[in-house]
Image (cartoon, rainbow, N blue to C red; front, top):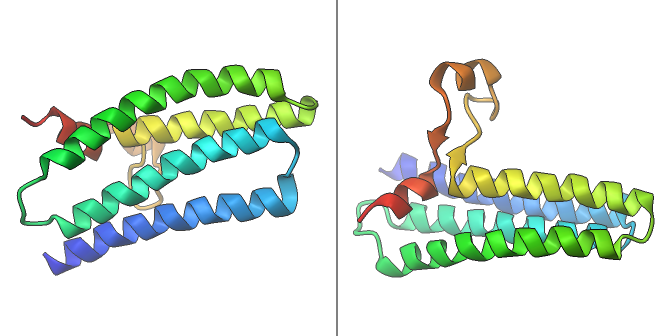
Amino acid sequence: MRKLRKHLFNLALGELAAAFSFLVVYKIYVDLGVASLLALSFLVFILFQGVTYWVYRSQSIGKKKPFLMRKTLIALRITNLILAVLVVIILIMLAQNKNDLVVSILIYVFSVIEYINYYWYRLSYGKSGFNIKLLIQTGLQPSSIHKLLKRK
């Protein structure tokens, strides 16, 4: 159980490191405009949900799953859908130039992929994180959050 707890906590640290890395890379290399910053903010918001979920999972091993976390995740899943629609509309309106628009759309697409990965389908397979051969063999599997939300 201790090994599993450590693994889940490492997943949380990985998500946190990813969020921090995206922020640093954006500030150093990208910093194009308001649209790309908005898209990055949406991505970081999604990543922090992953951090929160994996910390929760690491701390709740062997314990009854709290009702509050389930309700929070349901609310976030709905909030993310609403934000996804609003963000894409605002991105188009706020883009300051073509580069800002292109980068913001790429970041936005990655955010949506992360949202799907967290709340609907597990998109990482194998030790490398993404193994297309393994994905084709097994098909899409429900994500960990999706399984939790389907429980009664």
